[in-house]
Each structure stands twice: as C-alpha cells, then as structure tokens.
Length: 373
Image 1 (cartoon, rainbow, N blue to C red):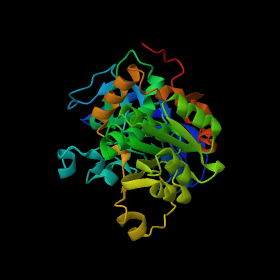
Image 2 (image 1 turned 45 degrees about the horizontal axis):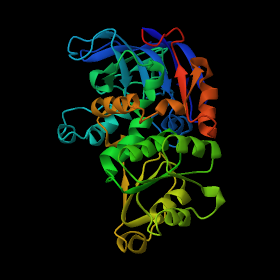
Image 3 (image 1 turned 135 degrees about the vertical axis):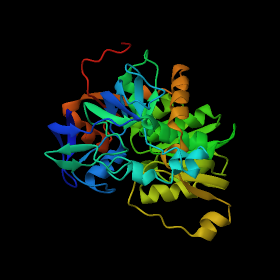
C-alpha cells in the first residue's frame, strides 16, 4: 500500500514529503490506522539531527492519533472505526512487562528503536529499500500499521487532533511525577523547562497536591502560561541565581522534588542543587550533555537522589485514559500548549518547536477530519 510520509534521508536533513512510500502488509495482531494528526516531539528532533540515531532514511513521529481502518485476526480489543492514540510498544511477555513496567521492557530497544518491526521486517520501503521506523509506528504518515499494544482507545467525542501528544510528551512529563516521584500532598516541586513535557509535569504536581509548584524557564510567555496552568510560582533563570530563588520560596530548604526537561548541563546541575535534604530530581531530557557531580557533597551528605525516567514509567493503556479524565475535569489543560499546522508545513512546525515559538506543534494530517465524527 502506498502512503504519503515525511522522510528524513540523512543526518540533519529536512523532512521530505514522499508519495511513494510502501507500507508493510498487516500481520495477525496489527491495526491499520488512518492518521488524523501527530504531535512533534523533541525526540523526533534528536533523531533528525543525530543526537540520537536509529538510521536513515527514516519516518519519524510517535505522538499519533487516528482512526482504525482494519484489524488483524488476532486483535481482540479494537475494531474499525475506533479512535486511538499511539504510544510505545512493550512486548508484554518479558519479566518487566509482566511486572507491569513496560517502559523497562527487556525488548524495548529492539521494539522501539531498531528501525524495524519486532520480527525484523521493514515497516516502510521506498523503491525496494528499507526506510526505518520509530516506536514501531511512525506517525508522520497518512496511514500506518501498528501492533495492538501500540494503541490506546480514546473517546470519540474528543478532538483527535489534540490527543496525539498524550502518547509521549504529556504522558512522559506527568508520569514522571505520578508514577516515579509520587510527591506527597503538601510537598514541593520545581520543574525546569516549560515545554510540553515540563508543563505536563507541573500540572501533575498540582494534581498531586504539591503546595509549591515552581516553574523555571527563560521565556516570559511560557512562564505566564505555566502560572495559568497552575504553577504557584515562576522563576526566570536569566534574572539571577535560580537555586537561591527556589530556596527563598521554600523557607531556605529547597524543593522535595525536581524535574529537568531541558537537558542543559547547568540547568540539570541546578535541579540537583535546588533539592532539600532527602530530595529527588528526575532528569528526563533527550540530551548529549553531561553533569558534573560531587557524589558525596551533592548527593550523599543531604541524602539526595537523581533518577532517570523513561516515558514517565507509564503504562499507556492506563495513564492516557487517566490524563483524559483529568482533562475533562479541567485539571490537565494540555490543549493550551498546542498549535495546529498542515502536514506539508512539517519543517516550519519543527523549526517552531526547536526555537520555542510553539510549545507543542501538531500536524493535522487529515484536514477533512471533523471532531466528534
């Protein structure tokens, strides 16, 4: 089946729209999904420019939303017409998946970051040559084929164009707080970086009952939005000593929890220094930068911890419906971070994401889609 897809042909190359990409045939546990929209994530940019690498050419995109067109004979929980959000693939059979931690799937890299389907076959080809995929889905396409475990069913009365980023950015930020840090009501949290992931973490801190939710960034408009979405305090780190500013807001103690979404060396180090005794920081950005730590003075003396978190330690089929319920309650207004672009505007949308002009660009792949249909 021929589809239209945005292909990156070389490290650092632009997205090129291709009409002659061949989509693999469905297998027994596959869904064929008509793509409605897809968010653009900083992980896509990391793979485009080569900070992380799967291979080229590649079809990126992993925050897709769409409508099921066909299902394989072994598919049990989906049918044509279902609305779905796509997320990462966990095998379901390894010891960590069986423990309920699919983000630690022993086959995670093979299933999501190898560029091919779990059985080693090509997801996409062009002129007979393999085109790599991402997360066993690749949502920068008009149609894709995914495993049943990639998909999460969502209500049909919601706007599918808005929901795709729940599959990565929003579930990563919120899951880091809900599933990993698990702040106690009355505790304090600082979030460094107010992009989509950071704002999701911040809103999760508010929902969790943190009495101080501190947003840190250098962009005034983003800090203004953070305050609108529930930050109790904001800090522009261009204005002075961020660590001292956080300590001043917390009676000199520092915060109980911190999340860094920037991947910037100095900022990651500040997220550790700003911790109270016994505090924990989660560093979750895709980055090639390193931090310098004096493990005794920075960590041991104050019993501080630094944790890495993959995809918010989430179970998409559990966490995404939970976020939708919070959204309906007016507690998780992720749609306020989004801006729609036409599919053919993908390079501009990506540039706006990189520059920070747009917090969460969303490519509308099906411009004829009508919400609620």
